[in-house]
Image (cartoon, rainbow, N blue to C red; front, side, top):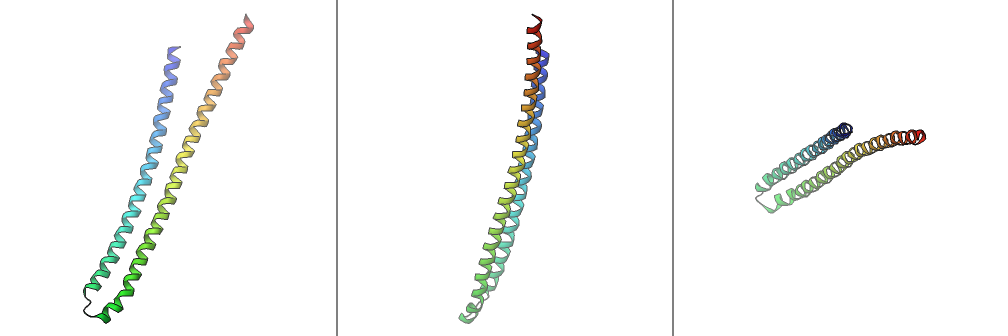
Length: 134
């Protein structure tokens, strides 16, 4: 009897460890994607901003400033659009990852329920056989 309990516990522990490894892998992949997307966006925004500041540093009179100013507004708008787009993409990737994790959890719960049901049927059949013999 102890051997059977020990085997069940070992199997359950192994299954839990495998599931945890899958979930961790998905979470780490998502974090890697998010970090990469955000880093790329920051890099693009910084490059655009410094390019504008380089042009702004060459301004020597009011007329040149008036000519450069709309470009600064355009750079700010593009930076904001890139940031929002990246945030939406990050959100979408995170939702997909969470759905995948939820599917893994659902599969595990269904498997555990099926195993428990099967074991309960086996025990019930043994009880019925034992009771009918007496």
